[in-house]
Length: 335
Ligand code: ADE
Ligand code: ZN
Image (tube, rainbow, N blue to C red; front, side, top):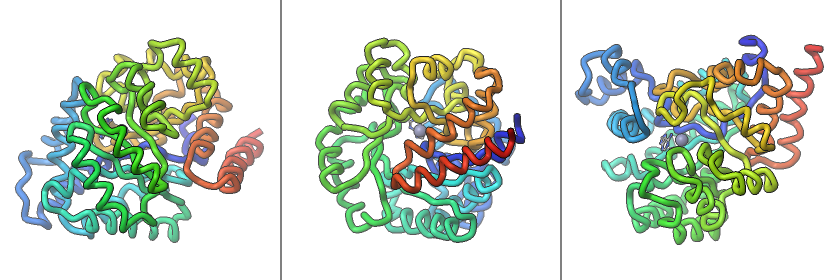
């Protein structure tokens, strides 16, 4: 199954670039920038990756990104991710970044976006991995801050395909950001939002009805609401599910009890993603491997998940067809 997954063409649609910061690279960049990390060693940092809820992770994630200072740092971070997923036959990536996590500590929007964008452009050339960049608003901050961030993004519009919403979910419903998402839609950005990772189904309704999202990031708590499940299935609203993230952040107690099979039975358009792979113990293929046993190692379902990832991407219909055909060719050659 491992080798089937390894060569399966696939897309990643839910990936925080700051969540790909491996401890080894973090120490390297900290030394380069003369920054003292509050951990003694790579091993000590690894040991700290023990979370019982989303906020435990976010505290360490924001601390880690403090090491990123220069355009080259953002380039190196993004390039390291691309090298990893190139070895996993990932054919298309849509990458989140958190501009407020950088601007608020004195790093310019330009520094972050230019470093990320030039690495992705080089990755397209060298690995033939196509890409999109989605900037996320931090929901624990207020809407005015998000509006200022949207204004910073406008001069870089051609480098950014979409706008998302992430960080601490509980107590920060999508409704808090209705105005800024309306502005983002007017500016022509695609719209996504984290909803239903820890928050109630109500937050998923708000993401759909108030923010007018085109994909739901996570969406696990939709399982509590049969009416919502029916709607998500009817609208074929893509869900970017992140299995290793879910177990690491205790959204799901055990992978055996992951709702993925029930999501598929309910007819939802599910995709598999890695979220913050450096913190959660695996990149895209490790996430496919993690869920393979609970779908009885069914290659057709694994292929369906990969096809869903292309079909849910912000790419043209012809790009979708071309990439989905790669999956079909791969399956046909096996049989
Ligand atoms: N930022 C990075 N990873 C996140 C996640 N899983 N949920 C919310 N915000 C995030
Ligand atoms: Zn996420």
